[in-house]
Image (cartoon, rainbow, N blue to C red; front, top):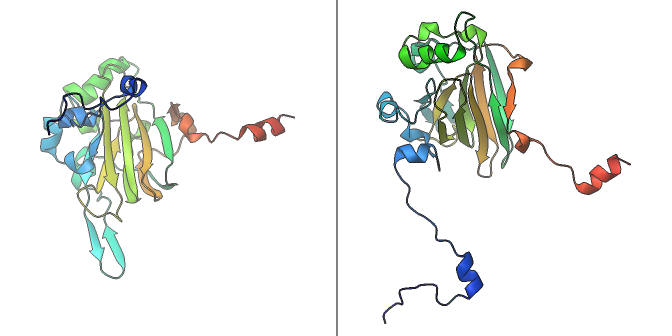
Length: 246
């Protein structure tokens, strides 16, 4: 039996007008990183970073972690060593370590920390020097005057959104998924986020997300900027709001 060319002739007119076909094309890795998102395992390594130069947010680092199974006991995973790996290379040494738990199906709206710049130049010129013209000269970075984040995930699965909002740099977006230590595999990774890069995190799946993160400065409330963070506010039921305003 031959199938009719129009697969949807059996639907009524209203349904046909409302119909939209799903696009299963995934696109290139560069298209996915700013769109539907990619696995962190697809982004680790200097070669991958070079391949995605047009899409990569300058200063962001995504580096692999190895989580070792300890039979009948649990697991063991290192975070970082002071003088080794990516943190050793870029000279980033956190001054404060913190932990956070996100309940399943919750999210942290976009947070952003202010980048600093010397008084004798513009922010645009300074940031281009740091991340474009002299990007490999890590000693120029004023870690002690601005908050850089390095994040690790110990439990659950995280969906991470990054958006570059720094003056003079392209407004790029990166979206990727990182697995906690209880999901051992290629998606166990750490990330470095520079100031001026807005970041949001969503807990994926049905388990709580536990993270540990280090910052290059101790906590300063004035460094904590918010953009589109209304997702963090739980709206009270209308009846409650009415009662509280009586």
